[in-house]
Image (cartoon, rainbow, N blue to C red; front, side, top):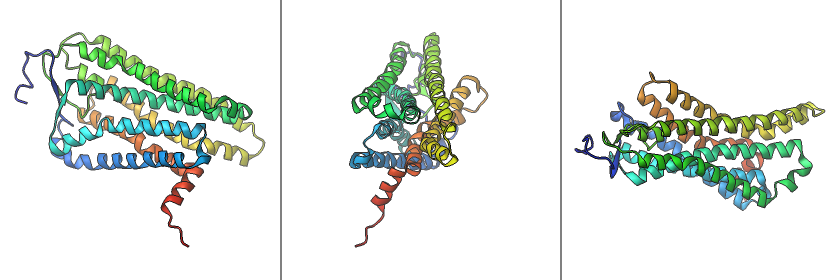
Length: 315
């Protein structure tokens, strides 16, 4: 690490992740909630996958999308947390240049993929409530598979230019990244070149992923709410709206922190760096942790199956 501040390299073989600058003394304590969130995310999402796989009654579009969401959450948090824990626990800060760019790709790819899955789930709810007669014929298994593949390709296509652009910049000042992971702007800000292309592309993608997907979700739910309020009885309205509750909670848990992070990164120049990094890590871990809890608690079929798994059967 003694050469990490030199100014004579243009293609560093490794980067140095600082963790959370200014809070190095508290790294072990900070690791406790993050590690707990990661364990809950791993257990919760694997439980969702296991239940949907083993319960034939859950083999439908909504639960298939939920499985894609669970896999996305597992990849999203696993691409960052193990390295973060190695920094916090073992002071293992080095990361290979190619590994750093790979991590950057996975972070942004699966963040965009998760947003796309929420949009696909909103379309599924729209079809189920607004056009129930065509729901089963429109969202057949091959169509669901194609939608899932399109969402993943969408995320990959948007994320791929980030590491490709980052690879081409010369890094002649420092290879020290003041972050726990290889977040796009944290890396390219180290380049000694005009990085406006990377900056503008990152901002454009963030707006496309968050704002455009939120727009289509809002359009879907506008139609859903119109259909719900046209139902004849209050009980029917509450029951129908209840089927969307878990999805709405998950959307809020994903987009509100994402929007806040985007705004603070772009406009919160007076916000302390350690707050930026702490909140960015929370944003990466909160959806993977909360999604299985939200869907497990509010979806009766999953909740009943979980209770069967963990409730002893007396004979």
